[in-house]
Image 1: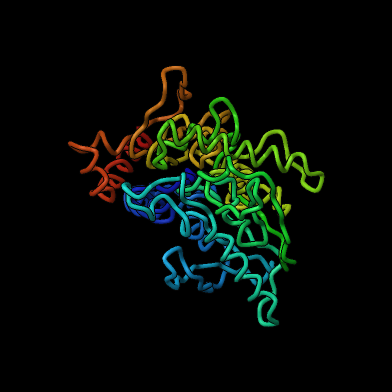
Image 2: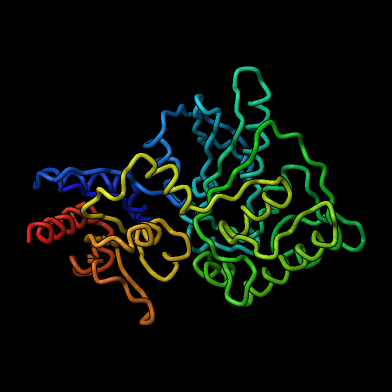
Length: 375
């Protein structure tokens, strides 16, 4: 029996590479099944760990000054064979990096991403580093700024009615009356792998769906949405920019902003998973699948890793084991009968205990999988 092990990251515990290793260790020790291990990334947390797992890459450090003027080192992975570099937004401006009490997307922005892109372009312009593409995994950010912060470090400026320069944070976007950009000549093509397909601006778009977990109140979300709409109206009136009707909401609009101002290509996580992570696997030969993530809910079907795996194997009559930290689906979403859900929270007295002891929880959950496979 061939068992595909392909979980997503568990945000409060570990990345998908570690989770995959834990599942594989227990499964291999207790069965004779052949395991195929493919940790997932949808562009969010753990993106670089997965890239390191599937490609032969070198690691370089890009140093920039953070918002407190402290020199900060940031990791970029380089595949010399394809002349492609990889950056993870969640490791730079991720929600996981900010204490809950300091989460405030009204005043946070993505400028550190822009600083890294700018500094990396300086490095690439040196003869010692040849790069054609910079691929950014976008997701898990603490920001909802439409990528304006990043673009502000790459030649974009905002101005109010009096011609005064406006700081590129969402609480100021409604004041903006004009936008100017002097674009640098980047020596590489930008590509964004996005962890959600949700529209940025909709009645219940990415701003509403993901904004509260980033620390925004209902009032904050209205201010942010109105401000971003103002920016969109301004650039839509400028024929230099191609503004799509449906803007991708990943990373608080980071990918959408980089697409509009720098022609960044947007790559859906589903395509990245099928074309890169699973590219060398004959899916018809898989007899069982183990996937899952920290919190599996309706958002998991908006382009998240575990939801993508369920869709890929939806029409195959094989058992799919969904090992989650927890599962919280609304009544109208029904999982197929061949999906067996195992929650770590059900294996311990409290949620906190399941998080603290997630390694033991993964071992227990994998043993449940083994019991099912031996029936």
